[in-house]
Image (cartoon, rainbow, N blue to C red; front, side, top):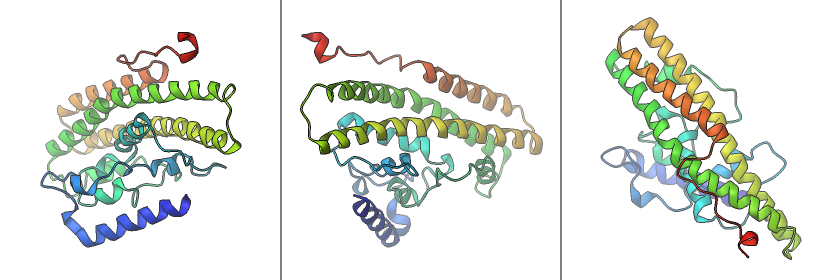
Length: 247
């Protein structure tokens, strides 16, 4: 399984080197022809990295695959979105090491780079990235609620259905991977807020503007939403009746 994972990364890297700047479309989105259903399966490896386990060999359910697809934009640095190298990032070929120490200055360093020459552009980009994250939260946590709920049922089912040792171990590996992905996203969200806050403080010091008020509002809303999902499920999610109680 590990060898297959690295072969997929090497293939994506080779494809990137051939395509160069043609990997993305006119709007800097990854071209649909370069995307496949398993594009974000590598997130399992990141989620359990450093742990005494490995991802399950079971096929992903639709919700489990969606969980990984929705997790990716919340895990990758906001400044890596819609770049010419986004294709490689989507395939996990490049990207930040989530096990490394977090650099809260990284987002600000990119924001103050030559790409954004005017203070207004920097304030607008910061606000946009914060709001994009806020918009992504409900769908991710709704999907996470469904996945974690069905995993609770799967864990209970293991006590009553006949399984081989292999099936039981693989099921438990998948449950652990799903839980780890949700934990990884929560950890990354806390780091993103820290990075956004640092960037806002630098903007206020270097190029003070009333636009900082709008950024502060957006950041406060993001923090509020993150705090909400620590103790609540998505408002649109309703726990379905279990099979045992439906009998």
